[in-house]
Image 1 (cartoon, rainbow, N blue to C red):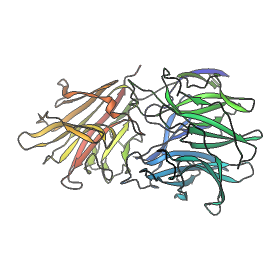
Image 2 (image 1 turned 90 degrees about the vertical axis):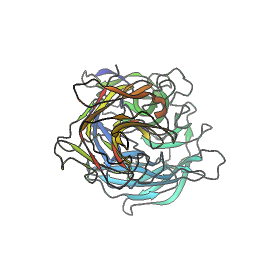
Image 3 (image 1 turned 180 degrees about the horizontal axis):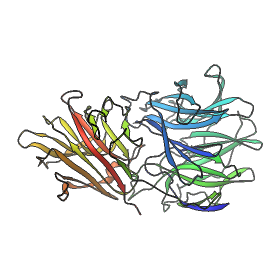
Length: 518
């Protein structure tokens, strides 16, 4: 066996709440997708070192239109039993205090790529559900429980457990409160593992920010009582100099050789701003005196760590993306609360090009026609070439840096009554917009647009002829305005029309993303 040195995070950009699983010789990681569809991104690996995007699981099972900001698909959990994959997820419909409307569902499939079943509704008492398959054949549903009566802002009141009956396709029997949480509070992300004579309950506490912590409990009975390990398994809360912050939400996997690893989320703040969102890291854990410990002997995240592999391999972090729209659109694309399908993103009407039909405004939570990929690098360039003939100022098409409907940058082609076809720029920070007074007339049919990001600064460019140099649009922008919330920043293209539904369309020749991080 070899020790392969790797660098965390293993999944860069918006890849939060990782849940890890091994099925025979293949490892899987699924992550939260929130309002982006298709939902629940799944990765696979043969060695825990290099990961490949294998599928997105939620395609037709959910309706996210109108869901509020930072809601929708939270903390999926993937398990496997008797030749079948089980995926548990939460569809959050509201987080307005004091209540939280969070509905938990189960879908199944014989293969990770599907087809996946129709959802089975489970409960709504809290979020972050997971399914434990016990050795006796019984199945148990865990989830955080939300108690609106609590006087604190976060009202997570611990972890509950209830049996799941596969024949009835429902949870049944008594609900057991198995963990009240610690003084860190905000207890969530429960997973149960069986090791020797104990059931081990892994939870996240302290919130998903700087106080994030992985805690461990154990019991000889699945319904408790559970004994708390007073020492946290993982946290960066007391390590302000660590490059990896907000570390928590862990899940475990055992290799065929008996090694154990924990996947967990982290952030890499840049000048205090987590522009790339919450990412996925991994570290080895060991069993000591009946408890889990990081293999390093510490309780903090490690940027550089080691994975035991059967042969010497090299970690490869590939972030480049290129779609020339010569076939079906590539699977890395996501859309906001709607599926990217032929009804609005079409490659058949003008072969070799992507035709995007207009949606509502870029701030809409219903029909916002954005096609985007994750920002995976602090430094990158992305560009596209678009043909668009707007007829009014309410029609626009262009390139965007997009955190959410409250925080975005949009460089777009539109119409001006005095200048005709023009390029404009709009910025939104926490819902407060600023429309640049820069108006650039253009005459060519095709226009290239580019965004170049270098750490905390983003710049937008255009050119009408590929032979001419790029011209900057407006002033440099502060990328920290695209940090925060539950997701990471996206970069993409869109078409919008506030005059008429599907009132216009734009053709895109290509889209290129090149990561420049060293």
